[in-house]
Image (tube, rainbow, N blue to C red; front, side):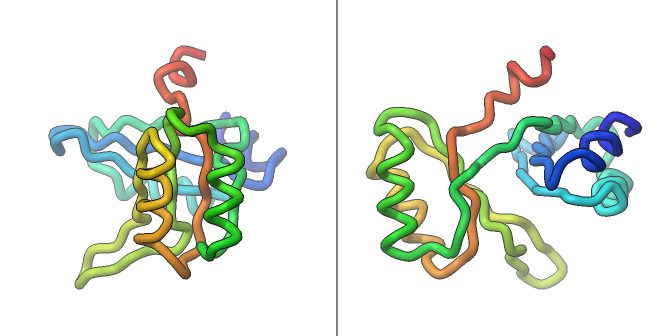
Length: 136
């Protein structure tokens, strides 16, 4: 926890991947810019949830999805490379809430993912290589 506090003190935000235990591969991505928000979220997690925090900035393309943002994403993310789109505003349904995310590997999938969230603020970029981050 002290490491996360140091990272947040020296940078604007970190991306955190939560991989939920016994949930059929379910995972979520969330951004944090304060240690208090991150530690509060960690207290909510079930035991055995895997937490991967990315120290380096992730998903650099930001904004509300419109035609210009879609074109920027298609220019900056090569066709055939794995991408991640994370909405930066929570979706809610009853008592449930989450940050919607979608991933894929083609420009067709990227366009479809972006169109499905049109008008919503997002962060987009290369899919974080969490299996390498966990080894560092």
